[in-house]
Length: 585
Image (cartoon, rainbow, N blue to C red):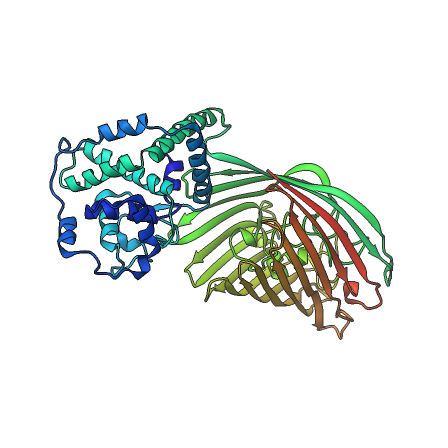
């Protein structure tokens, strides 16, 4: 049976239970009774089944394939195909539940004990146990549930019946004795006659789909690789007044970040990601804000200049090794490749927050480059470990995988209840910064842009997120101790940052209203008699509304307001406004 039909079957897992509970009991339950039985399942006592019928069910009568013949019933099904109008109505309803089926992967089970929401006291437990162990035409959802307390339609019932018919035909063809009883086959024959129209429609639709799939397979560019694309068109402006460093530039920017990603799987449980990118959106830092504060996530990095050159932006391979998910990152690795960042606004520029600061906690920006990441998900707790080096491809002194700039992360995430996450993060880094915050808080790229200061940092972060499905809120707090190792400038910097955020699902599906309020990294103490401390505190206030125009197009207007750029009250406020349009294909 095709995967489309199998997915349709599993939209309501109660299909098989309802379809063959009647078959197993030999009661000849009609379709309406079978459907109604699920609606009242919770009210039926565990011992509702008569003892004599239960005994008969447990020890089916031996049979040979010639005793009961389904071929006549199946032939009759094909002759009794529904009219064009009936077919259209059936296909419409099949499409409605088929779409839902595509959104959930299913897993074949070999023992009823694998279904954690099915208990021995359930009224249909024995029937389900028989379906699993005798017929092997039961599947569950990835989370180990069966979800049997759901209403089903005649079309779902027919899909389940068809699945078991095919399995029974396989058993008959293999001449496996002692599996099927004559009562089972007689009941199935009655069900085939009852659901003839639906079965004919299902089989006709599968035949048509198989033709289309064959055509697509013959013309696809690869049997292992899929292509995904994203293109951001951004119209942005920065407006600010005088600053202690001189008059800030105000101007309008229009550009793009376009990505093409090839996703390849060799075993079905692994993925190779190859992503190409162009980005001609210059950073606002340096000329417009005099600080990495407020830089856009979809623009280039702090103080950077964009270009239209195509580059290999990201290359990663992930697979399972034992109970761990392992990600190898030769190019462009970042923490979200192997660990949760918890914040609901993390969309990596194409969706979610507009700014680098609003997208995720700055502590995660300290780990990027080439290396490896591991993730252990144990349900109520998740452990992530990673090591990435910035210049791993340059095997010279003070470079390479282990002798140059690096970031190493360890994170523990607690998930005590559904939707709630609490993360504790530690990062040890050499010559890397948080890519956002004041000039003093980003000493590698800001104080000495040509070669940077030599620093070793220990960063600590706590993140909290709670998602109700309709809205999500959370935040983080982080502290970094950065030790400057350069001759003549040795000492420690204490750097703080924090934020709270809110995301609300509002409008068409996929639309989101977001708000971020926080303090970008600020030097609160130093070992230089205050010479490297930030004088004041600047707030980062960001708001946006991502409107999902179609399934593939989203328009996001938003703003970023810095109340005292570079954490200096002598600088006038800076406002960055942007209109982001994201195309995905």
